[in-house]
Length: 290
Image 1 (cartoon, rainbow, N blue to C red):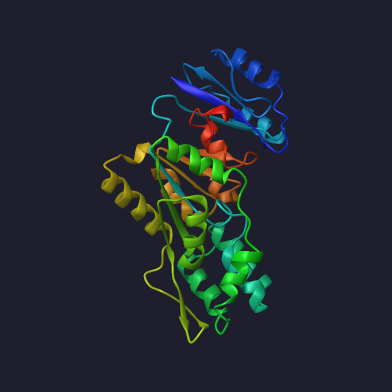
Image 2: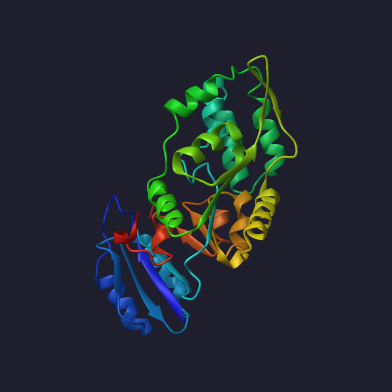
């Protein structure tokens, strides 16, 4: 049995009741259940429709995300999340680079690396090298003045934790940021790279080994083994090429407002909803949010 979910941006509720009703009728699904009025709805389906990809494109053009997945086991026991452009709205290294006066150069490298055009580790070393000599105190300034949280993040964390899920923040960014973000949102643990400092200045070096694509997969393997759960019981979310490994291995891999190359390879694509989409996809209604 499958479940089809339709959702849109909660800040601009526009999911017309006619859309899920028409799809339910066309595909022979069950009754439409509204998870949040004008924002998210779902219905059960016996078999996956052959024209799903074409209908997905039509819905995407309307500002609506369309997802189909197995009904059984969709409520997960663990969240594995990227940080930059996923749990927060910025790329931390780009913000640091802006403070260092090399913003455009670093932002270009970041965009290409996240789209899979550059090797992540080499791109990270190059970008960090451009930060050499930056006052370490700038990290706190960036945290306080430049970082904003992705809408729906607090609801996501509080709701799944209230229902017994474990949460891990795994970032190709830096521990100086993940520690703060994890504490604010309530993650159980966080992993990231370390910016090396000396005498209050960034050295332009990053601690080794670098946490990249394979390290995120390793985190998935290690944490699930420690918790005694399977990878199928994990929902993972990210936006960049270095997230693809964990997105493809997790039971539900959500490409959130992701780069084109990531969307092309991800199981689940959310282009319009916020982080509450991960709750709707697991069958939580807005009334269930903690």
